[in-house]
Image (cartoon, rainbow, N blue to C red; front, side):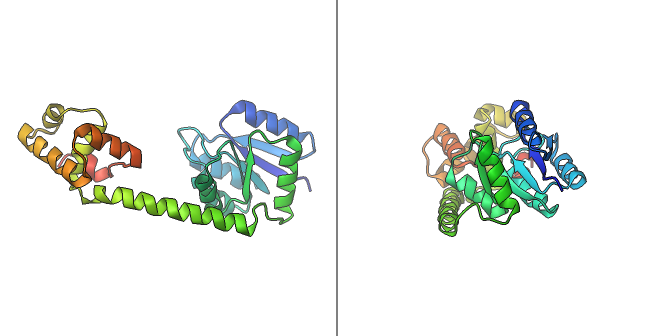
Length: 224
C-alpha cells in the first residue's frame, strides 16, 4: 500500500510544492486548509492518512493547529508539525497534545521523507531527555502566566468590562456613554482596576494586560 499523507497548510505555495514532491515518490498526498476546523477533521476522516503534516498557525477559520492535533490523532493518524516555529514551549505544547515531533519549513525533502517514514515505523522523533526538558519548560512558563494573570481574577465583572474597553482604546467618557452609566462611576471602576493590578495609570493597565495576554471573559463583554 502507498503511504497516505495529508498536508494541513494555508500557504498554497508550500502545500502544493510539498504535495508534488511527495507524490513524485508514489505517495498519495492531499492538502487542505479548512476553511474550518470541522472541514479539516472531515477531510482526514474521509482520506484516512497515515500521517498528517500540520502547520501550527493556520487561517482565521481554523486558528491554531495545536488544537487540531488531538482530533486528528483520534482519526488514527500520526501528526507531525510542519512549522517555522522555534519557541520551545510552543513545540512542547504540540508534543503534549500528541504530535510525534516537528519538521522545519526549511527542511530538505529527503529529511521530510525520512521523518515521515520514521514516524510510521514507530521510531521516536524526540528523545526522552529532550521531551522531559521541553515539558519542564512548558510547566514553568504556565506557572509564570498563572501568577501574572492572578491579579486580573480579582476584578469584578464590571471592572473587567471597563478594562476591556480601555484595552480597545476607549476613554472614560466613551465608556460611560456606551454603557449608560455616570462618568464618576466609570472613573471609580478605573481606580479599582489600577489598584488591583498594582499600576498607576490607565496606559500602564492596558500595557500590563497586553503583556500577559489577558482577555476578558464573555460575561465581561455583556453590559450589566
